[in-house]
Amino acid sequence: MVRQIFRWYAQEGTTLHSVVRNVNGSEWKTRTGREAWSPSTVLRILRCEWYIGRAYYNRTKSTRTDGKVSRPTPRPRAEWIEVAVPPLIEEPLFQLVQRRIQENRRFARRRLKHEGVYLLKGLLKCGLCGGAYVGHGKTSPRNAGGEHIYHYYSCSKRTSPFPDGIRGRCPNDRLRAAGVNEAVWTTVRDLLLDSDAFAGELAAWVEQQTTTPSDQDDRIRKAEARLQELNRQRDRLTDAYQAGALALDPFRTRVQALEDHRAAAQLALAELTAEHLEVELVRSHALSVQEMISALAPKLLDADFDTQQTILRLLVERVVVHGQSLEIHLALPVSSHSHLTPKDPPLRLLPQPSFPLPPLRCGRTLREGGG
Image (cartoon, helix red, strand yellow):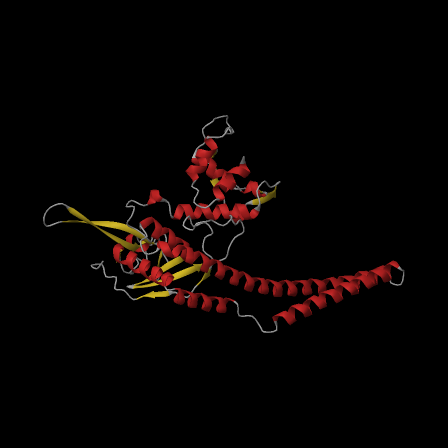
């Protein structure tokens, strides 16, 4: 049951409530014998580290005052004591689920009061304080009667002051939502439609990420030869000891020295091999991104709000606000489950690193009074 719950939630686009529906539609009952599962129970299962072999005690503490014991309070995580238990879930799957929980919380629709308005929800970051930009509305009366709602993005540290009460509110600009939405979407859309420009950006990124020494292959060969020679030396020492030509104490001393050299050689070879594999990984990601962009191109010109938002969340890591200037940071690799391409690739359970492209500058004016 636990394994199935994790596999359900790991599929991108799956929500907690859809997993709860699946569980309630099964024959599984809760620990108390109930047939109805609650979202909080399923979420506790998804967050529980017991299933990857890590249990903890000493997590809470109680104090005694006037002969009464207080309610247990959480201890700092540094004070927890870890105990190994048999795992049920693989570590990569567990970590993928934790990232999915954070993503779903970040983009949850229940936190969005005005759907179809805040296109960049979860993507805007303040360039002054590092806080998130949030959407909010301001109601103004119309001359002909009635009211009009103006939608804005503002730094969360502007709408509410810092908790220490000393630094006050963030001074970064408040921006009209419509203007920012249009500026970011058209910039990303035009870049994707201009295949030559995007290919140039992608090629520059690949070159930046794959700068390796020209003698990389020769260094790998030398590291492999060094390790093989140390292995032969260890074998010769073992043969000498077994033949009685070397006493136990000298054998132990020389073997220990050889093992230290072997460990260093193995580490050096692993580092060189990792650099080589990273280069191949970057080139592979660049190729897959080009293929996906080609598949998305027909949807760009007439994309509705949901399609625009999906594409931006696939391709944009963050949009940094500096006053009236925006920096759009594209992220690679993009998600492997876009719901927009004709055929989705298989689910990847291994964590994928993020490789930001150089930021794209938006030159559009984004004053509060403009659209």
